Length: 244
Image 1 (cartoon, rainbow, N blue to C red):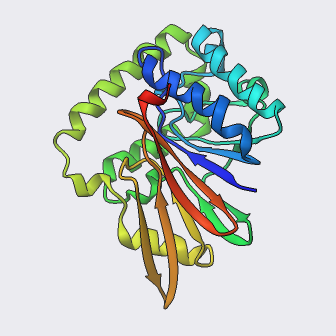
Image 2 (cartoon, one colour):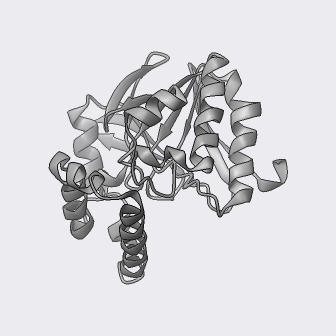
């Protein structure tokens, strides 16, 4: 028995090679797992569940639904790109939405799941923006505007974000060590699995004399990958475009 973890796929119609790689993963790899956890930024962006009318989004939901029908349990955590995924997508994909963070018992090992953006506490501007857009009142007002307007606003925000990233120090966009240690302490020194930073690696933290493992998931830009965990531990696996 094993479970799989992925994040930061940034799926969108303009990246056919990555979309094909995801289809391969869903069809040939994920059905062997008892559970698949998607830890945020599954889509490049999500403007609201009414965007399920987009054929690309419908196809992705159908692929997930087929995987769920095969017996694999599906879980999804919001990322900074797709935090507007709601109940309609959840029903269409037969997937369970998880709060961020979520602590689970993973084959006897307490394991904390996060998207990872809240760990990047040095990026004060981003954290302020995150607080704004996660506010239910802001989301209600935003979702009340026409879908086309929402998409245009998101595109403008994405362009501005890319410009701002170029002027930020790399360290600011990575996790803050003290924040990580505080989270590990708060949740009882678990294993931690997260994405967001696009810096895949295995880290070992010593907090209050206790050893904690932190896995950072790979993004799916040039290729893809997943974390496979069972009772013996976790192993990172890479996927290549050539596999499709």
